[in-house]
Image (cartoon, rainbow, N blue to C red):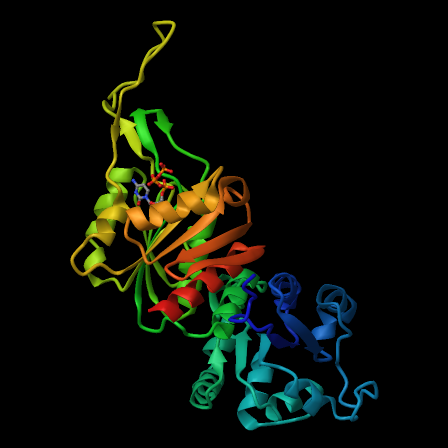
Length: 396
Ligand code: CTP
């Protein structure tokens, strides 16, 4: 089994300062822990007015630190010990006051002291009222934080707890989670152009009926997100899928196999990598009825016409990008997948059982290339996506 060597577990120190957005930090910790990121929470005294350390301890699975003089830390120096163990520090929410402290390099509580003592990247997610955000003092501080190499995540614009509408509220937990993930992902595909197809195709029979399949799009969307996190310029051609478009990805909707073919072909020339994850219908109705077919006979025969094989056509282009196929099978998994790899002339194909893959958040796959089989143990699709892309990067 290939282990997750490309994905060393990461540890994040999450600092929480005083602001109503502190409630979003609870959801953020849940998402981080679920993604196997080790989270150590540090709270300021003001943060404890908004959310309790017990909540954060329960979600992170670790005691929360608040005090400079905490005697439970081995060397008696929590500010050094905690920042030394972190791969990154995220302060979310970061209040206007805390940002000002960072600018001045003040160290009058545990969180500000360990930020000053850090030897790792610092990310801050500002959260404040719109007037506080727009105040020239805050804007001066923001400019200085950027100049100091501190990464700003947000703020977001919208309705605020104080009733104002505007810039200043903290990004949602999901958005912060995506940005932390991107921060921790090695940039193995920096500058590469990657085109991915995902989801099911929909072949209309009449205006209300279609031939489709059970693909959810989760694997293809996870690959698109992971490729963007690895620094690639990603285009996602999506068939039918209920998923939200990944961040930092150009998403083109193309629901029929024919529309998907056109979308792929008009974008393929600039691509370095093509990953064909979509479950493309092999056939479409020979006639697409303009009006709903009425029930009139005891049986109905549909004539089907073959669709183009998008992946095979891309792989046979004169300057074809590096092509990766997927094979979802119900039997003879590796033999069928390897036969497809050779028939479509692909450097790499990913074999998975339809029962393992379709609709699930997890997958269990085997990558097949000219050197043989590389199985990946069952894992969330986001993890499979990163391991697959790390393998692609190593083959380029
Ligand atoms: N594929 C494609 N266009 C098609 C059919 C398939 O691009 N019209 C791609 C899929 O995205 C996948 C690979 O080809 O990456 C294998 O698809 P699959 O349907 O399993 O293979 P087929 O060649 O159609 O074989 P079969 O349906 O007989 O198993």
